Length: 310
Length: 310
Ligand SMILES: Nc1nc2c(ncn2[C@@H]2O[C@H](COP(=O)(O)OP(=O)(O)O)[C@@H](O)[C@H]2O)c(=O)[nH]1
Ligand SMILES: Nc1nc2c(ncn2[C@@H]2O[C@H](COP(=O)(O)OP(=O)(O)O)[C@@H](O)[C@H]2O)c(=O)[nH]1
Ligand SMILES: [Mn+2]
Ligand SMILES: [Mn+2]
Image 1 (cartoon, rainbow over the protein chains, first blue to last red):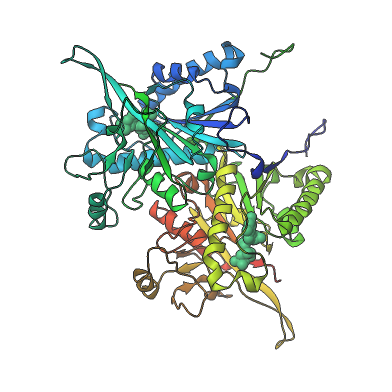
Image 2: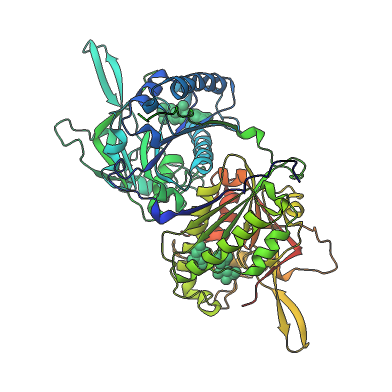
């Protein structure tokens, strides 16, 4: 059908999923990590922190999904500028293996990404359902046969230890998350201070189960709202300066700010339910779905990462 | 870090999911189709039929997953022999865009793939849960940003119209399936005959809903077993020779023998639940999950494909 030159035979790729290892020593075993970030706004602090990760960049693929609105367009432009800088002009060791940028083909449900609007209780179901679909699109489209680990990292995480990936992988858990805090200026102390930020990492409670049992099939439980007292144990609240940084607790719900997942958990089918799943959605629903597949979530209450302060 | 020659800058791929069209005229619009086949045994009839599909092969990627047991090894060897023949030595127009073969990293739960053993009721939950995980592994690992359609095609489907993909896509439905029959020698008629094969394509019934409402949370409804009369309307039973081949009916459960899915349905998060989901698993659970995401399944009762007869 084509003219002149003989075409190359099309590629056949034979992958043995058994040969893709997922171990506590991922660097030694040259394991590929896929870092996935849904991004509504671009923060320079996120990118700078990403560049500082000491996991070999040649083993890291980055995947982004950005909404197709004005804010998303602006973020895409800024992101691409930084990507070009890193991939074209930086030292070879700083460059990532590959980068995929997706634009979301559905409208985000809220007109504003401001924190006040974003965190209103009545907006949560639509917002988090849209977020779940964005995460799923990103996941289904970028996960490849050679991926060992998926690190979910929100675009507003601006500070983590450079050894984040190795530190989490070391625990050899199917899904594991550090504690997400936020730095702020404390006017009482007249000094910088920090406070817990992510309330989606929790251990279930009898009260929350009771609330759920009385709900309609499409209702969802939300964490961090006074109207809905769940009495769940929040990992954010159990940070203890004096304890081991690598102390583990089992979790029933997780957030997505920084979450390391063995690729096999996703391959078994664990995704972010955009619909109520045991009255949970998005990342919290993901923890429940993983559990249904036999995988238990773990939290590290004393290992901290930091969220941007708007 | 490397010696001598300057490395190419690593790839950055920018995909706008809005630019990947999914239309009733997929050939005209050059839409990529991913054909996914879980395969425990290799049938030459499957491969020959695949080669006869008239959808442009340069737009088709094939993905296979085979179990890591003796039978799976044998099937892999035979499959690779045929792939080499097609991709290396056939006419250019016969070659597929690319081919991915995965080996399953878990043991299939049944020791035998024989039909008697395979279809025993008490074996169904473990068997179909393992099948669901195999389908999910295949899906999560192969779906790419440029995929418009996913055709699920079982490895024992040995006869379809060559225009299968175009014919199904024409309907512009999120998920659509033909009716799966089986040819056999009818000793009464002393001639070849055919009978319905796939009973997983169905319309729900009040009786089945009633049964489900009384079940424990981990129980599943199964179709085609006398002990569990569901009174569902089976698409297999409503074939009508005299009616239009393109007649549509809405379905609540689907099988996976031949099932065309818009890639966006999967991207939203629709997968094959390996756990009971509304008392359904695997392909039937998939139809329910798609429905929860807002996507309705369609069946074509008078459009036939044929299953191998062991
Ligand atoms: N693609 C996409 N990303 C979003 C959308 N909304 C928020 N994000 C990103 O998703 C992550 C989590 O959302 P965020 O609003 O920060 O959640 P919060 O910190 O819990 O309030 C952040 O990286 C956001 O930039 C959206 O509609 N589409
Ligand atoms: N990868 C994989 N494929 C399987 C396994 N069991 C069956 N299959 C394939 O999955 C498809 C559907 O299974 P099959 O046993 O034919 O289902 P049935 O026709 O409903 O009895 C066929 O293509 C099988 O070859 C398994 O354990 N692993
Ligand atoms: Mn945030
Ligand atoms: Mn079959």
